[in-house]
Image (cartoon, rainbow over all chains, first blue to last red; front, side, top):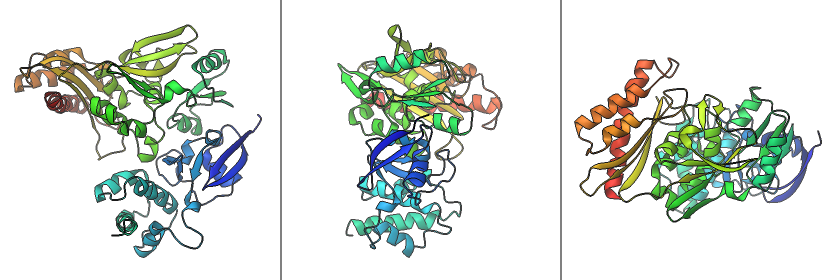
Length: 158
Length: 286
């Protein structure tokens, strides 16, 4: 079967890639574009490790086909830091030790950024519900929630 | 596998009708891609319907809402008019999965996936929604309760696609609600789901009601006896007891990991009472 030629924007840069129709966006990002910051966890949309935004909407990249990305604007963990300068969420994750093994971290960061872009002053409950689709098997949830709330406060200039 | 993304319903129907092997409609993909991944399905053709304008829009005309079958849960939640007119339908759709799933999951997919526990379906049934179905012989409207026949089995014929859901103009003093019972706070499959829409008259009595239950039978149920229990009442204890019993009596559950038959029947009655109370309060304030 012929591969599809996909043109999209990833982290603001125009990209082109070829993909099989059944290939997920996750696999296209990792294998075609070599953006391996987005992790594969469950591959069934339960764990959120593969979270990216597509046209500013948070999705699991394992539950979207690469061909569906044609013409879309995708943002991944690789687009979060500005050069050597970490995004406040990344900085707060370090300060709060909000990661242990780290495999869930890119998904949590992308998901948390999507929340703060939409709602700069979330309550703790809102953070917990928003991030319920991201699983941390080291179970470090509390520090993650604290880091997100602290980053939100910093971004608000509070 | 072949992937097509037609820009019109006619093209989509043509592709689906002409398919010789297994052809599947791709909306949000949150069920379909998992089933492909786990080899439950191995389609030869995927038809992505998200490039068809009608399927991606929410329109209100003369009080009638037409919700595109491929509008996502997140988009429904961001529609202020729909959220205020049909809060139960939006709440139900928003109970499906996580934030990430909400970014993709659709009500058309939730119905066509053919799960008895689909959250948005009892809410649509209670609302009196019709599925606007387009196929090789044109367009027809089917009551949502008549779309699913059994697990994974629909009444749609070859080449037919649900284009949109039509929610009727709401009478004065009407409101809807949906509640789901699960053993945790979120992100689980319904043990029982209950959607209720009702109308309250000037004296505070229920003049019209529709009650639907999910996850308690082979398909979502419209329970007329439960609706009859509410009519004429102001949700007094006596009426709620009849509602509770009628909801329980309508259940044909199986014993499974979600609970025993007896447990599901009990929960269905309790959930019907609670859902009715929310719909009633909303209707009185509307």
